[in-house]
Length: 406
Image (cartoon, rainbow, N blue to C red; front, side, top):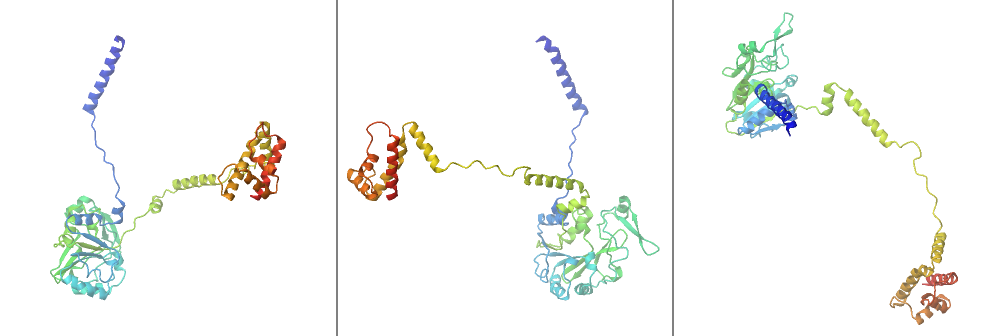
């Protein structure tokens, strides 16, 4: 025990010192694993807004196949319309105009696809609102900026546009608390009706206009950057979004979104976008090689060589008879035939299944055309010794004659 005492004390002390040093100098820091956005968030830019509205008592509903009666029959208090996704005909405008005048809140996102085509219903709407449509899209139209640190465009002398990167600090000082807007669309203040509500960006360009129509209102803006999932977290965007959607639905009827769905790339789309085709091609080649190797037969003979044919039935019976003869049991060979004859005879004469009497044996001999002594020899028990070969042959002839007749 004494020779293990000192090493035990040394090891225990070393462990204690290690634990104390780790407790003093080391720190357990939680590690956050980055989680990419879900497929729902990538497919639906309004997922966060829809969940926000549902939790605050304003049910959100999406319509991807609108028709002429979608807006007039909407039971919601606020309707958002993606302009390029709704048929702006004169008949459709005349259908939903009374809905707006009776207190409906209509939000229209004038996206770029809408600007490519002429729509008579939209011209009628602009005329009733008192808005001129000539100055909607300017020459500086460019991509939608993401965040306050987006690139601004400065006009050049040759009429083009030069992008200039603006730091987040300068943008925040120039326009503190302003929502994000689509810089591809602007409104001319000279073409707006008096008393309308409008919002401008950091450069002073009007990007959003809201005009009353009867008891309701129509709000026009470009692509709804401030409503989308990755920008709704900013306070300025959230305030403007709530003012247009949740606050506009004062009675809690809900908000209807008429828009298209952004297709989310599947497996092959993500694979093509990654640009690394060598690993999947190698995997496919390995799987193909293994599959071919499994279905192609091995080299050599396809089937086993058939064995020698069996012996004829006569030779088999002869071999059995020789076996019984060798061991003096030829009578055992005849016993199954004897039982078969008894069963057939009992069935034919409707008598008990047993040894036939003398009258039955004589009748059976006459039926088969053989001597009755041979029938007696078949059914009477033997008094001495095993059946001899000559007797066996004679008895088998009697059996064959009887079975042919029965």
